[in-house]
Structures are given as C-alpha cells and as structure tokens.
Image (cartoon, rainbow, N blue to C red; front, side, top):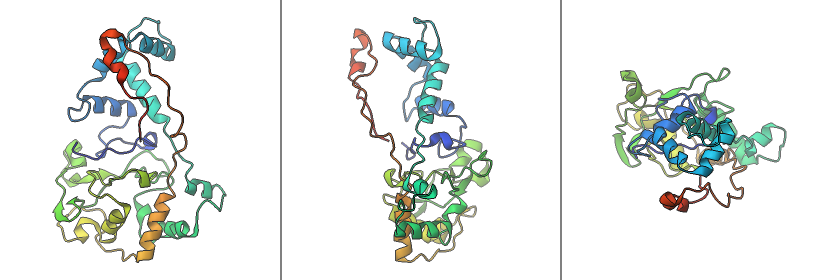
Length: 281
C-alpha cells in the first residue's frame, strides 16, 4: 500500500475522501477501493454478482431495497449499502464533547491546558477546524482544505516524501505534495500518522510540527502551506497537547457484541463461510 489507510470513523463528515480528496461521495469511495489493484483488486459489479449467489444476501438486499425476493443484487444497491454503513460510524461523544456540553469533569487540567495550546500557540486549529477537527471549512462545511506540510520520507531521513498528493489527482503543479487535512478525532487510536505512516507516535508528530514541517527542517518546499517557523513549544506544552488529543477519543458502539453469524453462501462457495466475523477500526 502506497498510503496509510485513514480511519472510517466520521468519514461521513468529510467533504472529500482519500488523502488526495479525489472523490466526494462515500459511494464512490467504496467503489474506488474495490477497483484499486493494490487494495481489493476487484469491482463493485463482481462483488454484486458474488453476493447474488447467496440466497441469504439476496433476501437481505431485497428487504433493504424493496426488490423482488429473487432479484439479483445490483451494483448501485451494494454501493448504497456500503455507504450507509460508513455513515453510521459517526462518533461525537468524546470527553471534549462532553465537556463542551457542560460536564466540567470530563476534561482534566492537563487536557484543558492542551486545548489552549491547540487553539493558541501551536496553531493546530488554523487547519483542523472545530468541531470536526479536520479540514472541512466552517461555517458552510462545503469544502475541504489541502495542506502541504513537507512530510519526510522517513522519520530520520531529511528527504521529502515523493508522493504527489493532490497533484496526482488534479494535475495541478502547485498542489504537489498537498494532502487533505484529516480528522484528529480518535487520533490516539489511529497510528501510524501522516499520509504514508511516517510517524509512529503523537510525540513524533508534535515534534515535526514544532520544527516547522519539512521547510523548517531545511528542505526546499516552495509551496509548503505550513508556516516553517518553529513553534518553540515547551516540554510541558507538548505533553499537554498530546493529552488533549487523547480527549478526542470516542469508541461509543465499537465494542458491541459481534453477530453470531454472517449470511451464508451455497456449498460451491463454502470457503466464503469461513470469513471472520467483526473487525477493528
């Protein structure tokens, strides 16, 4: 995989999908992943045909889409079903959300200090807009911003990552190395970080920003949108900032009991009945 897979949580609240923002709708996002030779190496049409061979899946899709019981699963139905599931993964009940709704015990002193660093000295909120903490621009939330950070190819290698980013999708030269500003919600659970997983810890990410990104480290990044000036965060400010980022964690509903079984396939496709139930986000 050329890029680090982003979280699916709150994907419905993003204006564009993928690190380069090349699609706008979750239906298209699902289809693109299925067709990508480095990911699923298939197609939505092929998946629909496979599901049609399962009477149980045919019946489930017929109920969901008010179709005839024996009707084949349609590609559009599969896209809609996958997108509907992704839209169910909205999580907005983190300790910070509880604090903002009036529970003053939900955020400790260090997290409160970290919030001030986030909104003030560290300037994080100039790109990670509240309340979604991603690049979806308020108040209309109709577009997502892309930023050039000068991300390194490796943590200890002073070389710019070669991924063209947004420019690879648009062909626009000044968008070289630009990537969609991702959500910071549940960031404590979604390591590694950056579009290609350069950093393994939040401490490394904070250090990268504190030094002014790639340009701040001495790389030539003429279109870097992140200010190259160092932030001069103190050790305590860095630690408080990380504690605040942990306060954006919300795993509500992700620990529910898994289904006891999945819709079955016929004997000729019996190997598919061995697929695991549940997963991790």
